[in-house]
Length: 136
Image 1 (tube, rainbow, N blue to C red):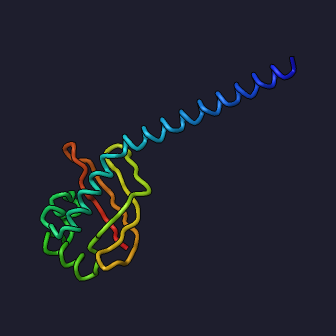
Image 2: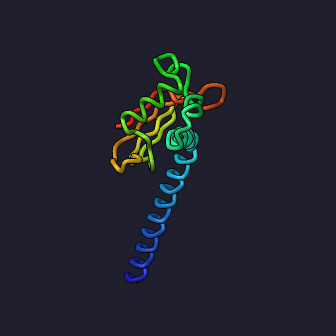
């Protein structure tokens, strides 16, 4: 009888652990799905910089970023003179809160140097636009 109770207890503990693991996995998948729009917007911006398509990168920016001394030529100068053209990147943090979002991660530049990248977004007319970015 005691052996049966032990087996039942172990089986119940395993079931609870599996349920918890399943809930955690579902939560992670849900968060990733909810925040994928900002990750995709970050990828689009970084890809434009990588390809030296500064006009496209500029069009992905919000008016708040465009109000500063920033046009495609300024963006080109900033990226090229400081050797900040990205080659590869990955996001280790992404978030969305209302009409604001952000991504943060690591970047490897075309010259082989590594650093950090952070991009803040605002949602405008259903599109995520770059409000601020930092390449270090």
